[in-house]
Image 1 (cartoon, rainbow, N blue to C red):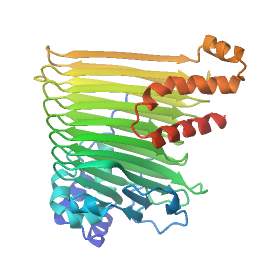
Image 2 (image 1 turned 180 degrees about the vertical axis):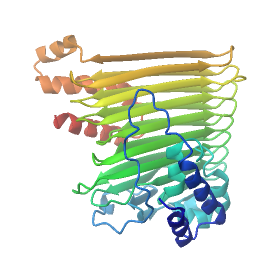
Image 3 (image 1 turned 90 degrees about the horizontal axis):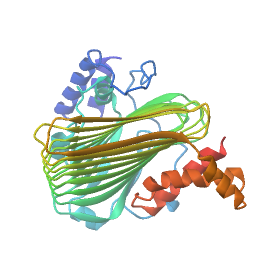
Image 4 (image 1 turned 90 degrees about the vertical axis):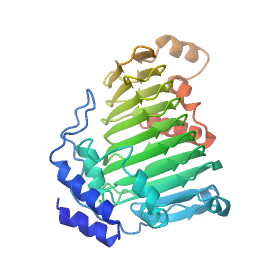
Length: 420
């Protein structure tokens, strides 16, 4: 790892001085900071990056654009943007949806103002590594009072034949009283088996009165070791509804956090996860209530197959002064194998008296009575088990606002079940 390589990359991309300085400061901080704390997950010996920063070549694994619809869309393969689609009426209203470095030219002040405000580089070692070494990304900017009726889609493909680190920075800014629905996909494509890493940061800045519906499906391959952070920063009366499907094949640690800074702000985090094979997935989902009458809800359901490991840490933290705040969480895990390993850890940190808080957590196996009932109605064991899994996860999946995403999550789950 050399600072010179980072600064050379920054100069080649013609990044502004403030970003070069931020990268340099982050590089200096890497050796001083600790890894993030993910309770009950042993990840400290994982490889999270080789200290390289570069761009990938254009890949042969380019999707068929005739099959991906006509809604606003950005598609990247590796570090390369291969498709952009934004209707003229949205552009005329000031909406920007483009790759990160193009956004630095189109809306430089907005990027400078909000970059790193939801996840600061000095929070931990992996955050610092991300800021120093991210090599691509995207920016979605929605001006004040703009309401977008179509779902905006960001598709980010990791090429399985490439060893270029998949280090993405996604910045979403919803202006005051703006409304937007955003769908995100991280997916490995191709038939390669090259081992690599991913370090992904997604920042969602919801300014006063804005409403953001954020859905995501993560499907990175078994040869990708991943750290992913999704952070929300909520202004007064702002809301973010998160619906996240963690369906990767490789080892993953994830932070899904919302900071309810404004009075009356809301965060609803719904997470579905599936672990299979020997993979390890550790997920921290946190809501921190700073504002008065702010509301944070966490709902996490997971399924473990074979010898997989899945850990849910649900953290609700009500800060002193956040009167009238509400923090609720539920984490449940269904194990489909005697060799599966799981933890569901509810954590409440309450520093204020006039608040409401609660939690629930459970880990268990498929109920034999459910299986007996379904099989007595003529279903074979495999089909019966599949229906039980769908029912268990359905309470989360049905909350996802986009039907195509709901269907895709079910398809991915069926594919995991079929691999056993």
